[in-house]
Image (cartoon, rainbow, N blue to C red; front, side, top):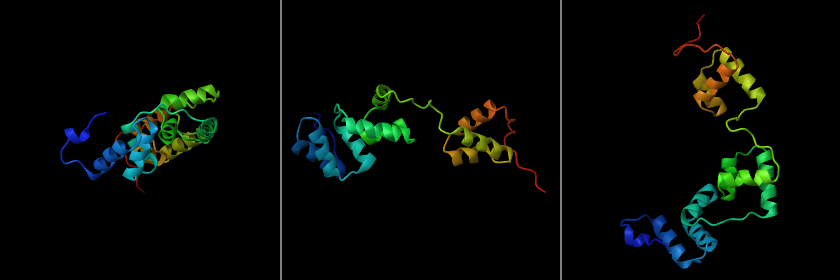
Length: 164
């Protein structure tokens, strides 16, 4: 264990609470991390980050947790969000899904075919790639790639719709 108090000066109150919790909590694995999270007052994904930054525990999911993970993925949750939620690495999430023979979505396939069709129609109606990227929560490069793949003619930069 690194003694942060000996190494840092002017540390934040959060760091004081965390190091105190680590010192007073169980020194083996999950107990120390849980005590540190409780002392820090962190919740949700922030608590997961605190726990991961303090102790990397080999967290084995129960059968019911794996069922919940699979159901959430099939419900549309991303592997990244599931990894944060279950305090796992993304590859571990992928391995659980593979063991359960769940067909995983291709990387980068964030929108359904209907959404992509709507994106193309909206672009042809005059929307910019930037506006479409914001609307669908993807990058401008992704919008451009989908438009090119669909053989949609790309307008020049700074194009403005004609005014009547």
